[in-house]
Length: 200
Image (cartoon, rainbow, N blue to C red; front, side, top):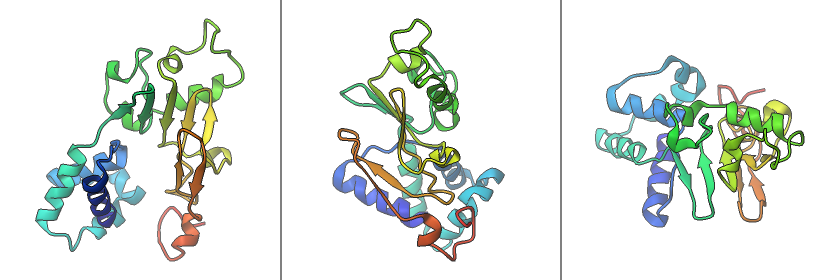
C-alpha cells in the first residue's frame, strides 16, 4: 500500500490527477494522523497496509497523510458526470448530503439503480431524482462480482466500475467517453501466495 501511495503521489506531480476519497483511504488517513487502527480495516487490507509502512520514514508518512487530506469526496466534470466512491442519499445531490461518510459507504444509490433499471422510464414521475441530477454517475465500493458480473456494469445512467479487485476479481480501468475498458488478471492469479480475501 505504501508503494501504491508513493506511485500515486508521483503521478499527481506529473499529471495533476484528481483522486477520490474512499473508506480505505479514510482508515489509512486516521492511522497516519493519530495511530487509530480500525478493526474492520484490519480484516480488510489494513493488516497488510500497516506491514507495508514498517520501513517508511516519518517524513514520507507525513507526505502520504498530506496526499490523503487533498483527496476529494466527489468530482463533477464539465459534462455533468459525477465521480464518487460509493454514493449519496440526498435527492438534491451530494453537495446536500448530511453525512459525508455516505460518499465512502452509501450503497443505496447502486441498489436503487439495480431496482429501477428497465422497470421505470426516466420520464416517469416516480423515476428517482438522484439519477436526473447528472448525465452519468461513476461509482466503486460495491463489487459487481456479487452479481457474477466481472466487468464494469451499467444500470440506468450509473456505471459501477468495482469489479471485485479486493476479493477474487480484476482491476478495471475504463474510458468513460467510449466505454471501452481494460482489466488485469484475477488478483489471486497475480498474487497466488498472498494471504487475505483474494484467495479462493
